[in-house]
Length: 386
Length: 120
Image (cartoon, rainbow over all chains, first blue to last red; front, side):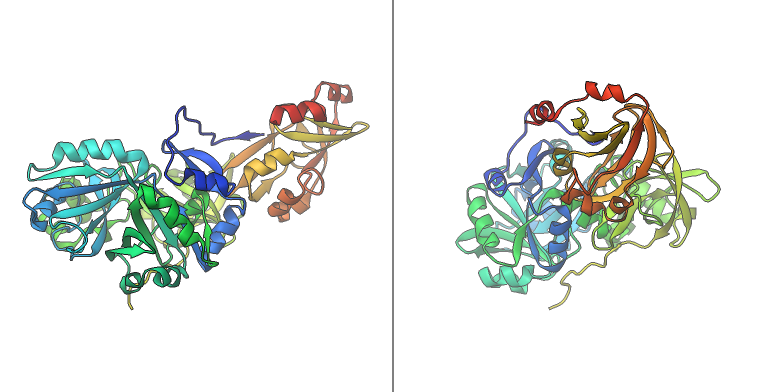
């Protein structure tokens, strides 16, 4: 028997929660240079289902955290500096609001996708933006930002901070009991608050499609916060395996799969993350390609794919038209525990992107029936209103 | 007689018929299984060639034929309920039965102690 996705790395970094994972009996794997828990003894299926019905705690401290700081202490200055690199409207972010965006290269390809938060003014000095970037892209992102960021601002990585995600329909009640301020947060809002005795930056966001929070905390406090949150009966630890199956059901992009330096935000179906002012005015690296693809059509677009049968179609599976012509490739695929069937995402030309379009998938030589479907596979349950 | 391969398959040999499955060690490493594809009855397998596929949530893994032979029976139960294999991989979770071309070659496979050392 062989494992077709064997990852090994010579020296692995550890998050501040590494010992906690080992104590819980986690199976550790190499991910983006870190030794991370792929699952706990409960297993991926149960962790996935628990997250959809209760609340799960994830260690995502491998992700990069950084600040963009304006030398003059003005939000407008930091926003203008970052807007040169991303297509989202950062200028009009209200204090305590967060946005999803992408770092683009000169040809409109995605260097990374990231979260940008304008902290509340009581949380951190004015003129500061908080970034959360992908673990595997940290060095590339920081070099890119350092190269293109205006002299008005500077980038400050925060390697001494951990990041925890609490995700699932019971997250609001669990965190609300420990941190009353968190109750007021809506999806994509952020605040600074104490959870028990730990000073945290909390945003109501996540990567599962469920209501939940991402919590930034000093590395020295990470283990204490982890234990505090796990003490609730509604909360169980959840590894990266279920994090991946949850985000796939939620139709969310994973860098290195749906997103890379050749793929534009228009192709990836991320136009919703480019606010109107930026679509009209441009003014960011890669804006020409985005404008062109918005005016005409991109060469290919990201779609959801539902295989008709039971074999999962994994990353790299060929997508063919009904005539047998190769039209695209699966970028993420696997088993959806909530739907109890395989699901996939991939890229096809716009001609084939209409939901219900029949396609074929080449799995181990066999051509399997599938159809294009609307994303997400499992509806999002974000807390958008009080 | 119970034998093992370095690729984490087990064989229970009775005359020239071998019942084949994946080991407890392999099942534990794979985690929850979600899809299993077995060879067709009558298929002629060559030692070392992919004979079956077991897929966990995260990955697809080939199961290799341990020896040359012809498939005489497959376990439809694990196809219908892949998660069931994880519960008893070296018993009810067997995959297929193989009529061995040369049953003497069984002697070349690992015995239980040798396999235990391999996975220790």
